[in-house]
Image (cartoon, rainbow, N blue to C red; front, side, top):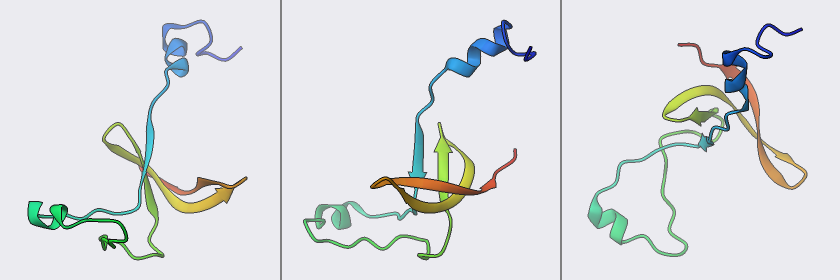
Length: 83
């Protein structure tokens, strides 16, 4: 029997958390933001070969590469961030 089963800690395993993927970031002025329209390209702070971040809450918990899984985006984890 798993030591978490039946314990109060085991109940935490059913909590759903929102996961987000961050490809990059950029600070923009309000003037730049107001100029955005269809077809606009916004350069980010990462190269195409850089790993993307998996974020839970406001913490980066892993990094990896974007993959396609049955026509949907997925993340192949290459690094788990500690601390």
